[in-house]
Image 1 (spheres, one colour):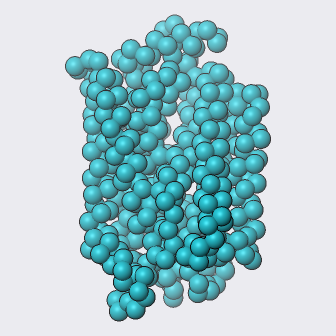
Image 2 (cartoon, one colour):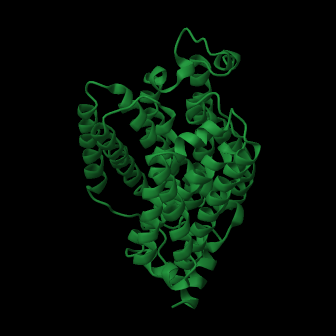
Length: 394
């Protein structure tokens, strides 16, 4: 089978249009927030968690791809690499969170009298928060830099085989990624309610972010699979495998969510149960039920069927549903932490505008990066398995 692996996608002005649309939506979000920037920072945190989750999820999946070495994963590799190269954008996008720290985090406000917050002041303080965030991004930048650098060298035929170095880095890199993500989850989300704690929370957030990235990457792959060179190698059998991986992450997320709930329910401690009480009463209880049904039960049921996973359009619908519910999940985690009431119209407008705005900028930057490298790592020796798979499945 003749496979030209040196084809890079030509997206034309599409990335620019995405970025322009994102900038307009962010401007509309700023206008909608005039008069109450507290709600702006809350909605911005939700949007930021969603899109930084996509970026970091791509990094986790990329390292997992290098460790497993399966031919199914090579068709995703360039998409994942382009996703990791959006880290500079997400580092800049973190600045509004630092600017709104006192609005978001009660521990960042001066003159604290709560003994629990005072006892945690050595860790929960603004300067150390910034230092830790810089450290997290430095670690993630280093991992993404070397994985992308060696991938480019592999394309040029320099010091082959580079895949051995990428595999070795990914082993330790996943350990470092898990360590930093666990602390980032505590800093960015769990510390919104400093009296509450959960030892499983970091793993839960990391799994949710990887699930978000997997769903988005699947949608991008389906769109690119109608264009060369992916149209020559991506078969329905690949989508079946990738749909099964999406199913695995859906099940893992649900398992961790249930485990956390079961442990806290069983312990029945006054420090832990208020977190769930705020999220299971009133309208938030309805949102929680929707997460169970639409972020687990329905995708789980659909992804059990082989014919759904093999059909691009049906798989895209399931992945889109997962993406929407991942955003709802971040709303469910963040917004009940604030007891003051906000105008519903302003909150809903910002929760819609800001994720779409940051998403437009993210897709613009992602599309620009995607065009920098060929869509297939043709010099990777494992590409022979991809070609053989394509020939075998017609």
